[in-house]
Length: 340
Image 1 (cartoon, helix red, strand yellow):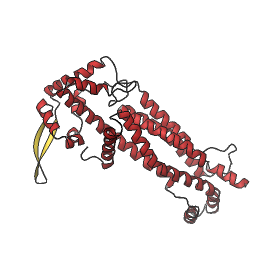
Image 2 (tube, one colour):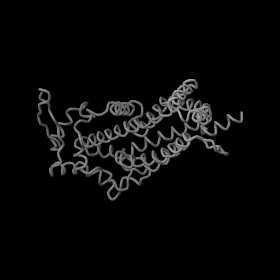
Image 3 (cartoon, one colour):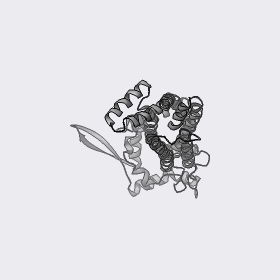
Image 4 (cartoon, rainbow, N blue to C red):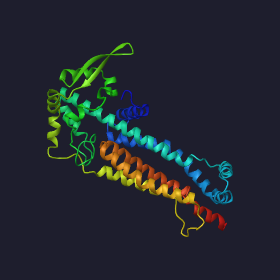
């Protein structure tokens, strides 16, 4: 979408290119290919984080000794803390890398799939205006497993086809990149009475501004164009909340696998920092799955499928990395160091 965050547009254009050139115009295959490629890139940050965590576990006993030694001298403690981190090759920001990468990607793909869903609806309307039979065939391709329309949410309260007012009143609908590549499409919508153009002076230049209408005639035209699609699934909802539940559950499992293993005999000398870190980890472990569920419930099923596959990749990566770089709680590392 014009004016949107550039990464969202890049991801959208990348997915559309894969869709057209690699994935045989199959949406789910496109999602799988893009997700796997993306995870192959981000795995390097995961490895770096694990290495840093392993180093952090090794210096944890020394950190606790510094905390006791300089408990009355915070400034000296900070200096010695930084010095020890540097000597141990531990980055203060490495533990934040997964979050700094995962969360922005989550938001960017959330937006990218929203734009793509709107573009698919635009293309469907244009096809319905040109050839009803071809449009019906196109709409039938949107079904995946139990979801009747992959571009609508897997939600038992959502219709299979977005209603006229909701779609036509979508903010900045005319700014979709689809119209940048297909400018004549807006003229078609104008002829159908679904959009209107006006002139506006911006920065001394006269520019054309397009607005989609929600008038009675526009709603009637939209309903006429989408009537065959609604008849295909008359009396049915678009899903059963399954993909949001899958995405949330997989996110929980992926987060669980990232948690440090607790020692069997927990040392009483564990520092407050370790305890606080454990509480933070637990909070994130439960918070992110809830956020994932809500986001997938409100977005289209295509995004929920993407996030589920992304979490499957994350689980596989964590299982592999857990073998090479076991996640050990700081107090466990300290205890093993003392035994040595």
